[in-house]
Length: 454
Image (tube, rainbow, N blue to C red; front, side):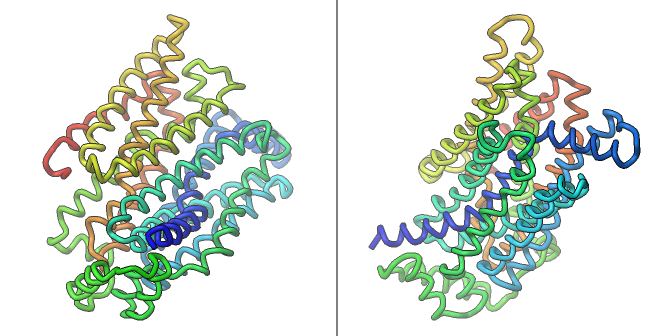
């Protein structure tokens, strides 16, 4: 019976992942491989339209906009996620996230045929909307479907799906797969496949038992969902827990983000959520993925080999997020965060030094690569697994949609700003470009060591 429960529940987690946070991870990494081809396409299109070649500054600006517009779409998706969760429920909201994914695939896939780099920009924005919706809805849906004893393991699958998405994006970008000039439109449209898979499979699964009981007052539907996901065993304790939460809420409707700021009873949860959500971008993890090519070139890796090194980075993050799933309940969240931020601080500090000295000794570039891998491993075993399910764990049912909206908005605003300005930071600071993230990781190491982080 236990095996049946685990099988059904983790099958749902897989289906949620393929059209959920997988899409977010895919878009983070897939943009790296066709970068030069898209820049060349922008140059050719501009030349045909205006009769003169664009300057390097214009191409850099357009490319930065293509990268960062994804975050604007993600911000819009995050803002609408709360409404969709309350209006349609977890399952229907998850299905709706696939619509912008299909739109983005169509626009980017047809951009070269149409001679329009603007279609890439709009398509990236729609893929961002999908990512913003999926990141919030997937994690909440998965967390509410899991029993208490499996909640940590199921929540970690969202982080693992992000890591798998990044890996698949790197793998598809290899020259042996889709990473050639003739195939880059297909590469940019590949996100349609996971969207279609989820649209075909998710309807066979129930909505969240907690949503059915607490929000919809559908006890019969909740019991049916529990049996389908957890099996026919004795789940009285879990049902009592949901009933107690329903009684505590006492018929309250889902709260808005404004309600979240007004209620002093959740002030510390709100502060914790904001601080922890901020770290996901300010530690520099997605900057490393967005600009992996230039990072590894700075580290001394031959340009032809950077895609394979990036593939190794993706595998590393997958393995460490899976390891985090085994450690999170044993070691505790605070300990994982404290240790990971300590190691990440050291890695980024030393990386700044090795990038500065890479021309001095032949072995220094290899140290830079090792430090990047250490940084990714520390991220996967700490923040990647611990932070994603945090709103589910520290807020009650009526506050969760608003909490995920706030977390998502914080994440996407920072991702947009970093994606837009980092190329100029890297150009201006050179090998010292990661010192900003080193300072933030170091400050968070101290924060994780304080009692409030408990």
